[in-house]
Image 1 (tube, rainbow, N blue to C red):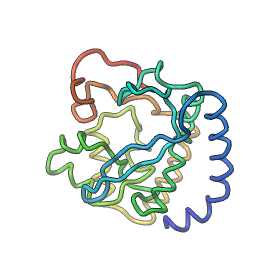
Image 2: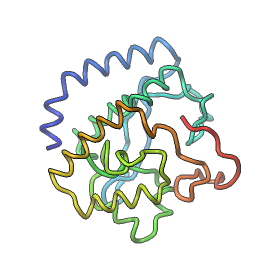
Image 3: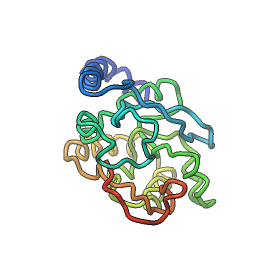
Image 4: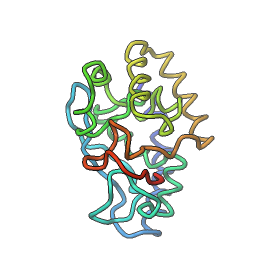
Length: 199
């Protein structure tokens, strides 16, 4: 299914990606792509690709506030087009179209034994958590959705998630979130205190 979808979206994705690249280049200084190490299936690390949505600064926080996100970045996040380069990760076999979102190593270290079950499948560009609130729900709830996916995964479920993802993205719901106080997602050293408005 991953290969079939990649073949179907290759040409339009290249066209849309070119527009995104031009928009990033014309509106802010810095690289086109954002790369970051994430944890994949069976705990293996890999480099995830995204379009850059933040200003090019060495001190960007893991969970950005509005001041760190560029004008084009807001549009890319709102439409989820910042995730488009992850098709390269799918082509490389590090990710699937559908599956649990890949997380950072420090977040995985906070999983309990049950939550580590989400690492038994390839991470995805979209998944059950993304159609049930995205960033509006806490990480424990997201992981519960991911574990539900692991138990029930099928081609039919993947298709259902893809259709629901399209509706969620066009509706723009759940884009903001990632509280710095969340026990799993909170960056090291920021597990308490005021919660900024996330981008």
